[in-house]
Amino acid sequence: MKKLFIVAIAALGFAFSAQAQEGFGAGVNLGIPMGDIDDFYGFNIGVDAQYLGAVSETFYAGGTVGYSRYFGKSEEGYEAEDISFLPIAAVAKFMVTEDFSIGTDLGYAVSLKDELDGGFYYRPKLGYRIADAIELNLSYAGISLEEDINAATFNIGVMFQL
Image (cartoon, rainbow, N blue to C red; front, side):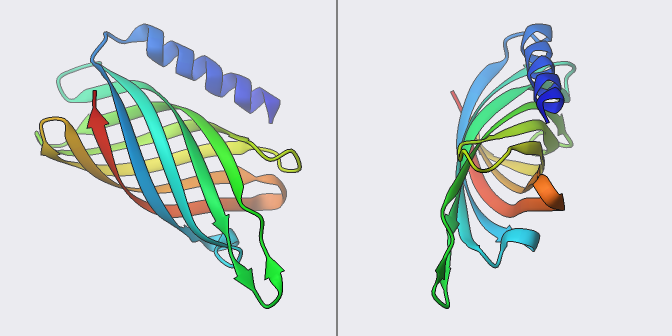
């Protein structure tokens, strides 16, 4: 896992240094847990800060860092503790049209809970620009954790260009 973390940091550093300064963005998203964790967690909230630079007229790359919290459920006398992660990732974004984009984040999510390791982080995204500096997005975020557990969410969010 530590090797994967080092690779993610290196990719993030390369993404920041290799791109022209196109701009910073910040966003928030709400998610519904799916798959391996939906029995234990009711919803997810996340915030992101990103930087994107233009590689071409339609392709952008950069890096992102965020905070993601999974809120535990209480069922049948059992209460799951909330868990939090700090995703650090490289970002790729392709503008299909002037307003519609597809992209992905790839990196590592650092666990903020001592008893839990982090894992490989991935987040394919669809975006639609609703104003000059505002984009709505849908995404599927996953964190590959220990013992083949995938902490996955389906998200809706908004990103603001700063």
